[in-house]
Image (cartoon, rainbow, N blue to C red; front, side):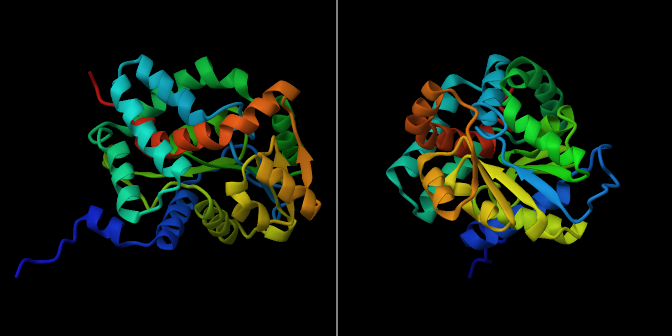
Length: 298
C-alpha cells in the first residue's frame, strides 16, 4: 500500500476553511512588525485597524503592485489574465467547490516559486512611489493620524501580500501591518501560502491573535473598511466605521448605527458601487495569492 501523501500541498488541501483562516490570521499576526511610531503608546489598550483597498487607498493595492511587476516583465499578460479569470469566475459566479478554489490558488501561486523576499520588497518600494502614494485617501489617512495623535497604535489589515502592506504602513508612519503571508524558506518563496488569504474571517483571526499578544481591549478598539466581506473584523471591535462602503456594508452600518465616511466624489462612489464587488474582489483573490507576490523572471 502506498504511503499517505504528507506533502505541504496535501496538508493545505486537508485543512477546512476555518482552519485555514485561523492559520492565516495567526501567521499574519506573528509576522506583524512594530514601527518606531508609538512603540510605547500612551493608550496601550486601544488600537485602530484599517483595511487598505478602497478604504485607505483608491483601488486595489494588489492591482497596482501587479501592474508594476508586469511592467517590469515579471510575468506575462496571459498569466495575469488567466489568474484573474479564474478568480472572477469563482467570486462572481459563486462557485465555492473546495477543489476548484484550491486549483485557483495553486494556479495563482505556480510561478512565484524560487524568487526572493528581498526582490519583492525592493520592487514594492519603487511601485509604492510610482502608483500608490498619490492614491491614499486624505480623509482616511487623517483618521489614522488621529488615532496616532491620541496615543493609539494603528495597524493595516489586508489581503494584500504582507511585504507590500508593511511598505504602506512604514511609508505612512503607522504602527504595523498584517497581510497575506507567502511561505518562504531561506528568503525564497516556495509558492505556497501560510494558511490562506488574509480575507474575511482570517482578518478577524489576525486581529484576535494580535490583540492577545499586545494586550488590547477590542471593546476599546476601532476598525475601518469599505467591504461587507470585512464584517467579521468590523463586528469584533467597539468602534466600527464604514469607509467608502459598498452597498451591503452601507446598509448594514446604517442599521447598526455605525459611523460612515465616504471620501469619494459622487461619480466615483456610483461607479465603485457597480465595479468594486466584482473587479476588486477578483483582483484581490487572484493577485494577492500569487501574481503580485512574484512573477516569473523573463
